[in-house]
Figure 1 (cartoon, rainbow, N blue to C red):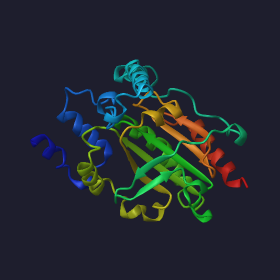
Figure 2: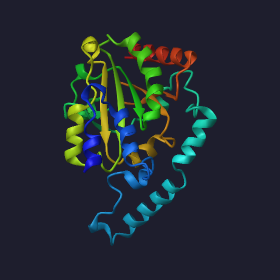
Figure 3: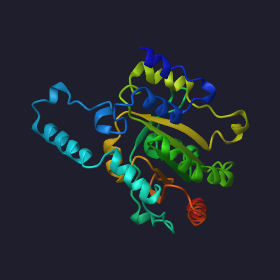
Length: 266
């Protein structure tokens, strides 16, 4: 109980998802928080599926997959390449070859929810559908500076465009933090936009995804949870460009150029 009180005593002014994960690791140092198998919220088979052979085999395959790569493998890779697991696309991915970004439900700090990407498939009006959306995914605290290296220059260029959206998505898969009472409390004290950012609120949106994200990661072929993942989507929710880790000048130039092309598409 004392540990939980300490975890929830972080002041709102300094609080964000990154601080929370760091604080949680201090409270529970002996528990491998970065191991999604042990800490995602749906790690036990539903009691009604205990006799379902297909469900058991699926869970067994998942366990084998997750045990084959863990936190130390991610750390080793980070030491080798600093999170730059691959170079970003130099040119835009043709529409005919682009794959759709998997549907992801996220929460704002006020508790309201949203399904990404914003397309006509989620009953959005035509005027609400952006021509280009940049989704910056952060699974661990270490990736936040990487996300900033992409999002801030992007915001400086397109922050006032009504046709562009920028979503910074923090994934929170800890069993403790996904419990309903704590989740509601966390959302109340999550990072709020500063007053000076008022003009950009419609474009830069900080959101949170709680719970198990194993199958979401599988669809996007995300392995290393310590790096940042950047996806540029078109108005149909298709992935037209992708980046990783810290942005380089050439990669930023490519991102901005591809965004401009999406804005010109009919």
